Length: 352
Image (tube, rainbow, N blue to C red; front, top):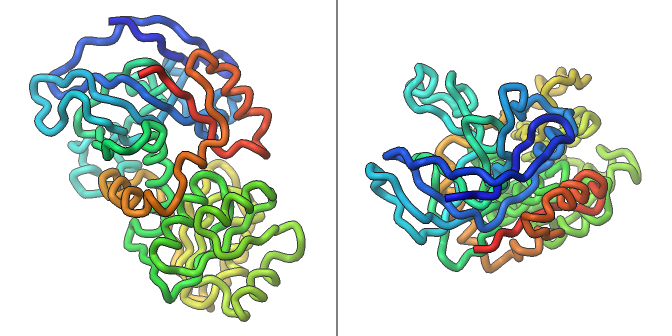
């Protein structure tokens, strides 16, 4: 069987080739792709601004946000069947190294793979993909394939609040810095949990999206000092939960000014490789709890259940601001690269 599949060979070098689909191993499933999102990390790898994409090892198929349909299963596959709608994990822990057996996060795995970032773990930017059963999750039949492609993104915002001992409820005021795809996922999670919610983003279109997807109030951090705006909105108390989903230096530094006493600070936005000056001493007298979030351990099925519970409350399809057929892959990347201010999510659609 042949598959038209994308390969990122180096910075700016993205190709579509027709390749033979590999033979299934006993623990693998063959999936026909229905939709695949273009993540900001995919864009950064394409631009040569991120080392996460390992084209230094060899060309790889991008796409860690995907939804599809099972076509065939290996002889040892027990819980998945043909015709099921599915999605899959991005961070693929081996499950057998010492860190995995110690119960550490997938990001601690000594033999970790990442779907859509390495030659040994191809992603969803191709007509077909092959992946091990343990990384695949069934999604409801009534979901669109693009909804399945949102599970990986949503899991980051969801896990960012509820994972690693996190919690939130109706007594909380949650501040989410960054109203991109992950930030909106965190907002929906916080609102569904009953919290009061404030979204912070300098882009007007993202603030407008935030109001549709869980924000009670929105703030433009460029309009006035952010700490003053937050304290005005919270009666001087600050947030009891603060989720940093932007990776922006100024946003990270502001966390210690906009949170209240004993607040939970949840770090999601990527800032690896940069030193960000912060007033860390405020964590002492405010007794802040700071938690990082990378590699959502055992949250695939929980994310799907959570999304399905709020499925009728939010228009998940409306999160995809731009759609392109797969054969317009280069136009899709151009849109994601050159229109970052207006794009929320570019979704690739496949014939299925």
